[in-house]
Image (cartoon, rainbow, N blue to C red; front, top):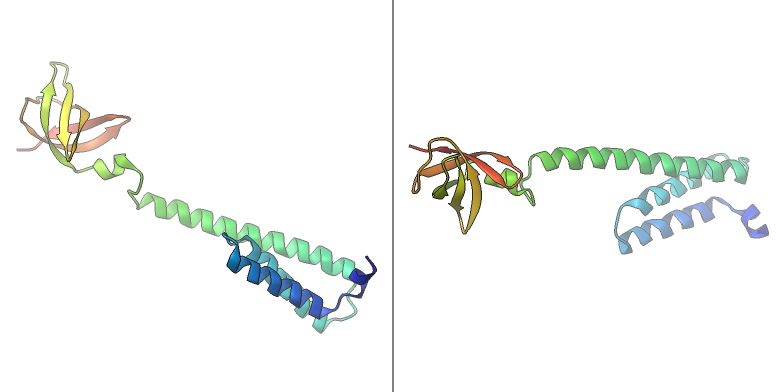
Length: 149
């Protein structure tokens, strides 16, 4: 471990670029922040060469963790916001406003409706076979529909 005590700003810079290059090869965005923290430590060591390696190593770990957590919080919030506006893999959102026809209906208002290339369980008021309906709500596997005039 003696070689570790002789680290200079060049070692931090090499570590940073190795991590940044590894980020290009490996999936994810995790190594980007650890590499960026190493580059920042190289800059600190170049400006203030008297800083001890222990302080730099602890500062590196703290900075890398802070950058990673800040990015994760930002990206997690962005993903949640984007998911609200997407109907990808959310069949209930995709079905809202879809029109279909009633194939079967029971007196209690529950039946089957044909939408696109499949049939769904439907529920609505005053429906008869052959009525054109529109989906206004999704409740589990049941489409809540209303009659379209």
